[in-house]
Length: 479
Image (cartoon, rainbow, N blue to C red; front, side):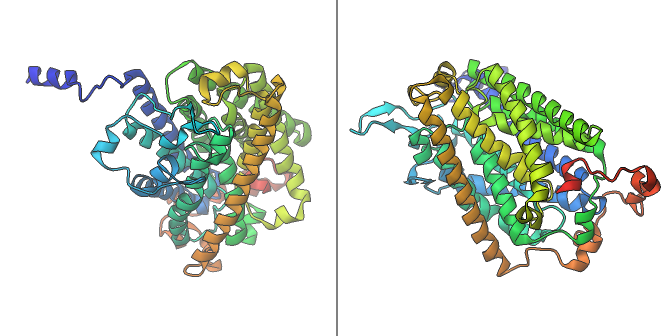
């Protein structure tokens, strides 16, 4: 038996010459870290940041999406995102389930770049591990994108409509943005930079979330007026999984355990920390006290902002991006949102537009300014890539970043609207008013805290109204 086992490990078919075991191990570890951000990270965060009566429904929306995306991904969506080209913005749909495909070396065939005369400028991306690893890694990104989108719809979307929405949105929105920017589509070929998903994941989910929130309609009047988190300590637990999981989110996108992945990880935590501190300082300065929910929002905006350029900018640029991501989304959420009547009419439950769309766009734009030439050469297949800050051809990079963001924004507004309208012809998008008053027990027949008859009786503001300032700090009480 020992001899048979050792022969299995020595078999060249299980360890071919092209396989780099270090890269493969890091890529699967990174994929798992990203998966933990969703399950249980955002499941916990969503279930605890909402009003007690919506804890089950909110957590289940994330759990369902995580499972549904898996099946969509391996049956058709992976190759629509990273397979052979069908259109300049879309790959050919086909399963990623066959042994011959999964054990072979991963190849992103459409990423080969050619000069105008047809000669090869840069070969296709061919990581040193099997396609199975790439399918796993990219599936975790697809899953978290639609789960982030769900944050805009918590507390009122019909769960059956959500079950239909997830596969349709992954198929017709996510795959287009992923192929266009990562899989070798027209934005990739043009040179738009999205290191790890500032556009594909965060701008997409923020814009799609806001659009879907418009079509679904608002929460009940009482929930919009008062929507306190049911467990802030668990919010921090979910946020902690989200933050540390971002190590794999950005560290895995060079598709290799190399020095660029190290830079990406370091910049990720520098920017997130800076953004959290800036957001907290602004809360203290304007509201007189720090907010835990506000600090979590600042952490998220920092993580989102650094994502488009995590391994491409220097450490000082990560600090600058953190200052911007801790202040500009804070302003759009806490000030501009309240003044803009259009935004007031749309009920974006967790403010995903601000934390992901605004921060993602900000990150993409600043990457166009701060992308450092040497770091770009470690990651990008396009020669002479650099940000406008470094002069020369870098000036055009900023314009490319803006154009790429406009495409992602427009596509998500149109496709998300079409999907919502089609679903509404078959199923109501919004939970019935009577069920909105009850929450989880009406929708699922379950309650998160069955030991408490009415969990909100423990809310300090109910017991001591006279000491409550009335000033809301944190997105769940403002948006």
